[in-house]
Image (cartoon, rainbow, N blue to C red):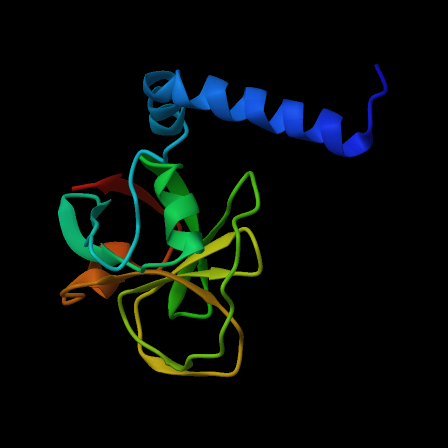
Length: 160
């Protein structure tokens, strides 16, 4: 019997198709096991709680790959370093995917990623020409500056 490339390809594709049809349950289970724990898309609003000392703030996560990767790190308790009298930062152990943009104006309560691994919480509003990737916005940042204080501080991030 003489085998051609087309004949071998036809037999292989037929075998794969028949195997897949007979194993729909296994395929569905495999797909389910490869899903992310929280799906950040346009139809789901994901909330996060940010705690500084005894003060807690509620935030809405951005709908992008940076926020989705950040969620996988939660819950997280970190010591953030003071910088410039308007922000606290922390260098993450691993890079996160970026969706960089130049916001022009940064607002108190913005949680942004600078570069690929520097997490920044802003507690004052000001203009900026730096590029960031959005992670979340604190719903009501009133009292954030007072809670964060002027030095380094411990901050807890967790899903609500």
